[in-house]
Length: 252
Image 1: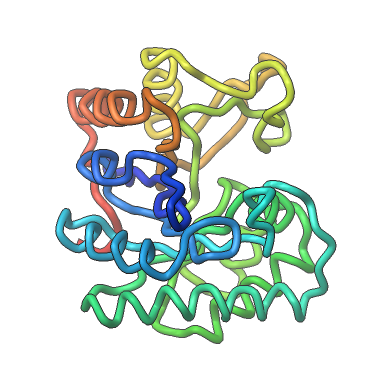
Image 2: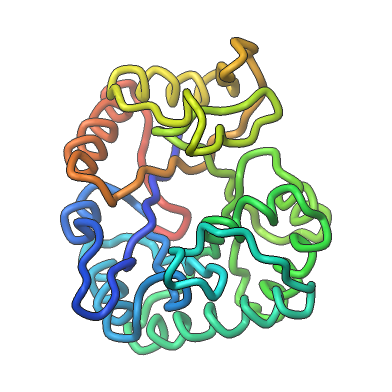
């Protein structure tokens, strides 16, 4: 069995540093690089892509809403035309850095409120997929397992990477438990590892209601913006490999 591990990186901005990107990149196989609207800037984008190349980590674009102050986590009302333009603008910028570095762009993964809304809103999801098709090059969409985005992408034969979360709880509908509610986070490594192994090997996860629901785990997201992120990511990968799983991205 094979599974990818991804992390949201390149989210510093100017003089402000967020996350431990270089250390996390030693343990993941794919990176979602911020494109400057919720976090990141041109120099950080270039640096992060270069680090990915050096460490053999696949590059993905991580576009968000134009909400730097809110870190892209605040809901916004945008039209389909706006959503497609946001995609082209941000992903196109990261493509330029990938071209300069000589690395392919593996996927696009939306950030924050953009991600959460597009996973349940067919109109927004369609606009995002329109943007991916316009970008060409067989770029995949990385999206929440079983979401509207995944279903629509499959109908359009757009490559899909279904994502699960090692450190987040799930509702009975297969969505993530909101960060403000109990059960939103899984902080114990052994609990996270057991949940991920169940997702990958059995195709199921236990929701916050106690129900067992179906799930597809192509890629596991681990967050890189807390002090325990590096050790959590390292030990999770070691646990997966000890369980007989191959941890690898979708390019190499």
